[in-house]
Image 1 (cartoon, rainbow, N blue to C red):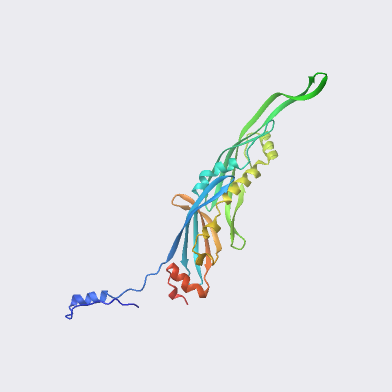
Image 2: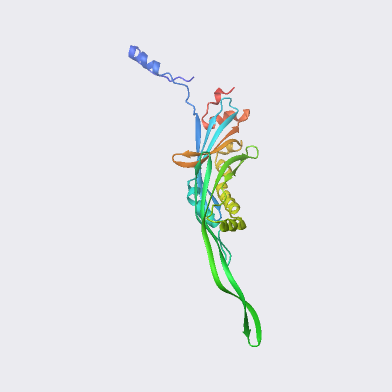
Length: 278
């Protein structure tokens, strides 16, 4: 233990003795954890840029064989742009004498540890009455198709899906799994038949899943760690959606192994008490 040298007059008083006792230096204070900010990460989904940020918190395990890592990524920008992403994904249709699909809004919120996505839109079809009529050019006659009547049917559609973040590839990657969903809700059977013909539910859920999976930027987040920590790798153990000061965030917990020969360097760099390791 280091000592602080204190110089006092030769005549020791009770006061000087008390001060001398206070001059004993306490043991070094080690950090319980170390936080690294996640600088802005931008992913493009269907041409829409989505920004993510957050933090990575590391702490030393009691056995010193690993570090616990908590990665938290804010989902605010994804939530704000989910409708824009859905509309840009290509699910909408506006066919002449054909199908009509339009996204009105997509709302996403935290539902426990999952994400609940509610989609509202319009679906319909333009029916055209066509006849063939003769057309003359000089002495030549050809038959041309003419539309003599159009009738467009439209109705509201609503559907919900719950997406759960899961760990795959033995703890090395993440994915979003559609764990439950409602079939599109319509006002009449014609609309239900039309949606089935369009495969509307599957197409919308596929595009929403693509957007949500863009939030799984763990590799890009970990790449911002210092090299001596990043090269150790991580095994993810748990993933969920949490409330972070009123906002939804993706939280991942995992373990980073620390080999014996690297412990002094790694723990010293992070300010941990490597001296207590066995």
